[in-house]
Image 1 (cartoon, rainbow, N blue to C red):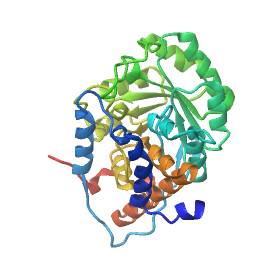
Image 2: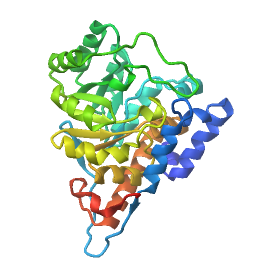
Image 3: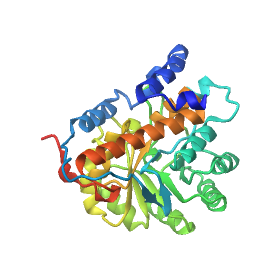
Length: 332
């Protein structure tokens, strides 16, 4: 399987996944979003409307190497916070649980894993796969449960811990009722306590305004994820890349990751140029895992890393840190 997968191109890998996903009726779940899915659609349309100019003469070969939370990565393309996938669950049973396969593929590609609503033992097995792990905690109504996750992340050697604040008011996919009931509102005072309760860098995920970005900084967070939860917050959310430049300007000292709707290396390039330190993928990793387990994830990451490198070469940037916005043309 490994040699076969490593010869696949991007579209071939996706088609292999769809060949497994379509027969079980789960293809609609690759494109989620709240109510009318307008936020998902607008996010993709804005991303596609950003064009890239080429700067080839005097350019030199590029390196996508990056560092996040003190860890060296092959490229600043990482996993978004992953937990239960309805698609991968339906494709089971898995000999090795799918989150562990995703983590293994990411480790082999020199990338970073991020976990969502997983418990201590499952988190331990994910960490064992070898990729650095960011653990994103849900805003549980039971505060003691949150502190338990903070301790799990510390004791298991995660590189960062955080919370997806956009779940405080219950995110909602288009076909779901809001939930689950065990999530709840978190005050700024509570979040400040979580930040102080852990020695790990604290990440606030679900930031989609300058106001929340500066508030996260003032509460002591080390990093934020500019995100609309893949469109599962509310309808008509502002596209993440439209807000990213203003957020970067407002909190220049913070580590900024971005996710929601990223599919290609060129998408990641646009985010880096607009101020992101790292770009998170969710759906594309589900697709890759559906295609070929950990081998599919490794291949997907290599393809995206190669594409990012090629775009950097064709735009004249030798390093990730050098990528800047003058090469982009934004929509009016």
